[in-house]
Length: 169
Image (cartoon, rainbow, N blue to C red):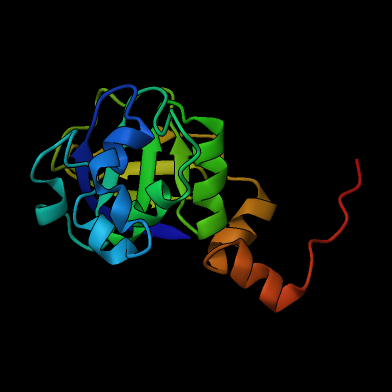
């Protein structure tokens, strides 16, 4: 599974409050409208300028805070195809995978800049910075999560397969 897009760069500790500002809580039943405000408290013009297929690159602890499952949903609805960060809040990570939004943990994101173009190979664990002609490696996404992502989320996966195969230890 390959993803290619332009980078939007964020720092550490991007919370679900920054992703989905509380003052728009009344829009939680209209995610398309809520997505028009995604990340505006972290980068004012993000929701107006992000394009389908773009990528978010961030520092540590992306998605911390409440378990608002609409936070990854509105990022995906805004057009973001993948988030790359040094680390993620665990509930955000799981919510994102469940809705089919790929996340990549990359130990060092400082070398990637706003506007860089990246090509991400989720299965082989490589990111090519096309702009800088650099390659970064990450731990590939586990197979069972790749299957969820390929189906567009856990709901689609369950509809198609009915259940997950048993895993032997």
